Amino acid sequence: MNRPVERYKPDNSGLYPIHVNSKYGFMDRSGKTVITAQFDSSSGFSEGLAQVRVGTKSGYINTKGAVVITPQFDEAGPFQYGRAAVKLGNRFGFIDKDGKYISSPDFSWVGSFSGDLAPVKTADGVMAFVNRSGKIVLSGKFDSLGPAGFTAGLAPASSGGKWGFIDATGKWIIDPQFEYAGNFADGLAPVIVGGRFGYADQKGKFVINPQYDFGGEFYEGYAIFANAGKWGIIDTKGRVKDAKFTRNHFSDGLAPVQTEDGWGFIDRTGKMVVTPQFDSADAFQNGLARVTALGKEAYITTTGAFVVDPFPGTNIRAERARIAAEATWTDSSTHLMWALRDNGSDVHWDAANRYCSSLSLGGFTGWRLPEIEELAGIYDPAVNLAGTYNGNNITWHIKGGIHLSGGHWSATKTSGSFGPLAWLFDFSSGQRGSMYAVYSGGGDFANPRALCVRRVGA
Image (tube, rainbow, N blue to C red; front, top):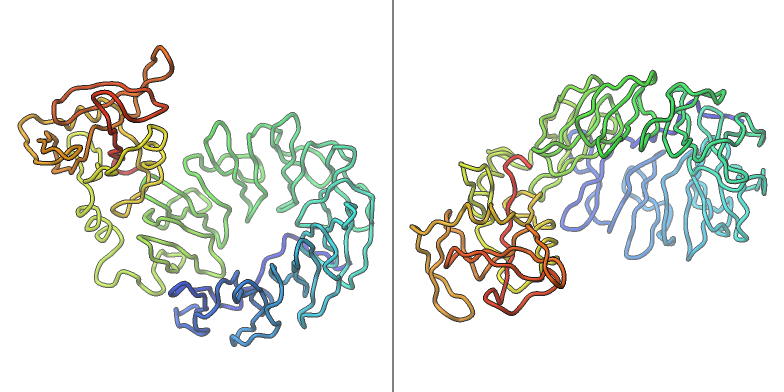
């Protein structure tokens, strides 16, 4: 068997998906469009072919954009070692690069090829492997198999409720003893014992003892871990290199991380090398990474430079500030940013919280319902803003020129005789009140609204 030393790493042929007017095409490393956006979706190139969807069916194109495998599948995966998993109805099979089945779609589940073998589950629920010729091997020996199959010559498998590792002949190299096992990379595999993640070597010996709530597989010598909601990275000796950010794995020496200012990239020392400013960021592939900002998609180099600048004549921070100024007001005394308008209609307390938490406004996310003292902090009796409330003229006393349409929920709760109450604030009178958090309507605060806030930098 020709086994890979480590996990499979696809080659994208130097082509990157682009999204234009709801269609997908491809650009080269210079940003030049080489395949016009015309497909309904695509997952990118691997081994010279890219999965594309036309309508409800998926097929494959070559690097010239020509359809070489007609869209006919309900789902289609990337090629690995000359084989790709496809789905018809609720069954999976494998095709070669000519689009011919090497295994007809008879499986209820499949993993991916790694060398000569791919893990599968037959229609009657039996775990096995299928080889590149489509022959089923090692059938019925295991309860479960890892989706990535073999790395470094070993594959995670379970028997009797415990996980261990097998070789390509099906022999147990590390006996089943773990509650879970991932794949090997950099000589280590994540495993669970006693509900905690640790890392074992290829003899089953712990190199990093079980101690984490979560432990990911190693990439380029580092793995992500989590404890008590905090994320970090460790090296193959278990030394913590950084523990500040939520992050993904390393690729091309960099890892995307999320901070209060947005997504950026760190290097293996934990140094921030691409300034946090993006709304999302994918891992690098062959020197480029896809990022989004203010509703625009783009690719950057490992230095953070745009391949094609989506903000010519300005930059993300300046554009974000311009948009924010039109939709928000920031109280310099508290460093709180407020929406310039409330939600404008009746809303239950739970719905008010959901409204704010899902709000994207002024180029920002991270909004929330304010606490009662935060609402009281922007009440100003010296300010008189004309408005209406339930069809009646009213005067609001609020800082920042914020437009209101009623009384406002706070996130602050208190107890009541028949359930939890939430505090309300009335910017016409400056009074506080409370209402049962399970409904809206009734009382002096008949129409509670949601006015959202976020901390600057959140």
